[in-house]
Length: 155
Image (cartoon, rainbow, N blue to C red; front, side, top):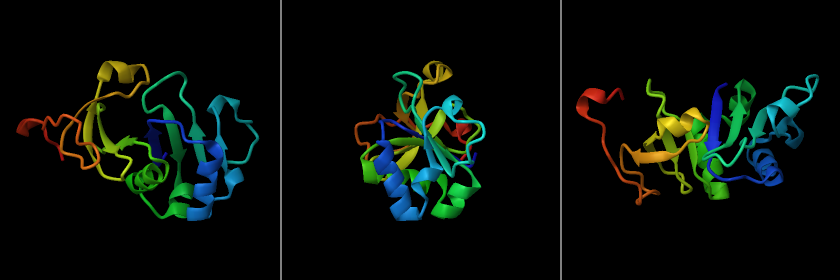
């Protein structure tokens, strides 16, 4: 998948479909909302899938997509996450591209972003919880910033 955007709060399905249609021309019926295991095997391939969390997981709402979503939006993962975050007033996490599984890019509800560290133990259970930021994030002034030591930087 080219896109795997984790949202902190629930996004209502119909307004999300409407947003993707109005801003990017994605037909609402091509945005599947629901659990993957509930999707019919013979259903047409969706442009995007929006999956609810299994339980009360932090950042458990996940928007996934591949080439079709990239072609429709013309945006990368962070840019699309920022657009949706600003529109719906939610925060999002996307892969930061590093080799560290506990490092993510937090996109604030104002669209600003920066790298954060998540709780590895909670993440093992599918619950993404932010421990601290690795750099200041404009829209998240309350987050403690703990820069990584020089030897641990890979970006």
